[in-house]
Image 1 (cartoon, rainbow, N blue to C red):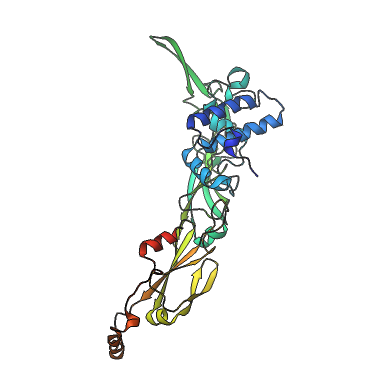
Image 2 (cartoon, rainbow, N blue to C red):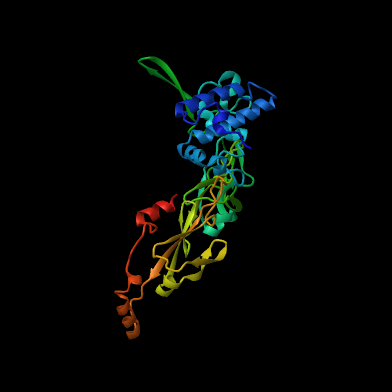
Length: 373
């Protein structure tokens, strides 16, 4: 079982953003690989701290983690969310948190032993449509992605502007004295390299468009709008030191013909005629796992809710399933034959047809309350 992200950073679940940042920075300095050479245990703690910080420092990811735990970020090719992080991910994504702490002996925070930070390519975003049946069990989707990759035969040389450092330093005179600032090199955009040989068809960065089939494993119970991440399947970064961006997968839930979703619960409208309401009936309804025979008792009232436990959708954290709530609607005919009209005319004053709700008959608001209990 994966360790709790709060426990990794030594925090309580009500920790503030500032406390999360401070705790991560402390652990990153303590377990940095340059400070602990050839120490696999320290390297593993360094990675775990970075993974925990990636989730807890992002308000949306933190909210999903607080609600669903690790299950909110599992099941993706290459690891969704924080899963499957490597050292290059950590240094490229979280170098800003280190500030000046890794200067000098720690090589400027660029990686193991110094040098410039790796430039990461841009992310790609796609939408994947899922039916409720696919959401029920989880699914593996194969999609075609158009991404930029390094063209075959492209070569790069050290950037003449920054001499391969990836950043340029500027000194300005202010009323407080001389101030030195560093920023990404405007020529190579921080890569430390500029293009030397560009093959035909490649763009100015030596990249070429390529169609690639990507397999995406989607866990059960996802909801509309959830974003999953497939690491390394975005655009390549130019240069020999670059790393690929990520593919961001946004879930789009398709509307079902008979069922409506409410969280993990499903709703089904069952229409019965007046005779069935009076005499009772056996009705067949659609569920996500096939048809189910349902008994409707005689004398059922319109608005009655029948609950089929466990026939809803699974929660993303794998803790049980929701229910299928069947709403009984008694259909009143709009046109009647002469004989039918005569029959109901006789029944107007019949005591069996007189509405007499008892304490057992729940009000509309009580029924709504039961739906969410």
